Length: 124
Image 1 (cartoon, rainbow, N blue to C red):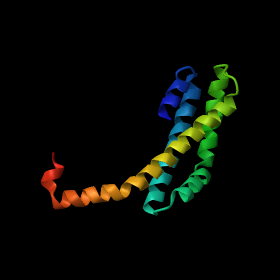
Image 2: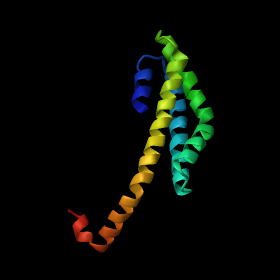
Image 3: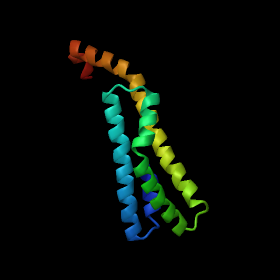
Image 4: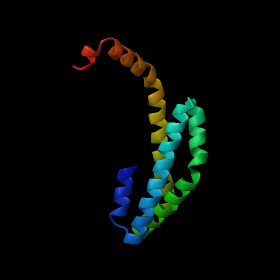
């Protein structure tokens, strides 16, 4: 997500890039804050995805508007569709990361227990 933002900013004017930076930061912060809170609440992936879609919608729309203006300024076709696709892809990446975290958690707990029992083996 951050790479896409960097590419967008490389050809836009300073005021627009400031807006894009702020929108990208707000959206990213919302996505990760929701992920952390959902993990602490032990939400299943489906509930997390639903929560993420509703809680971060204002930030997503702000990012899409700013990104679309940049794409439009660059003369790219379908700027709103492209901006929406990028924001959706970022959200999907966070959902995939959340899913992987839940899948790996039992293994990580076993490793932590092993390390507590045999710390010398975990230092290698």
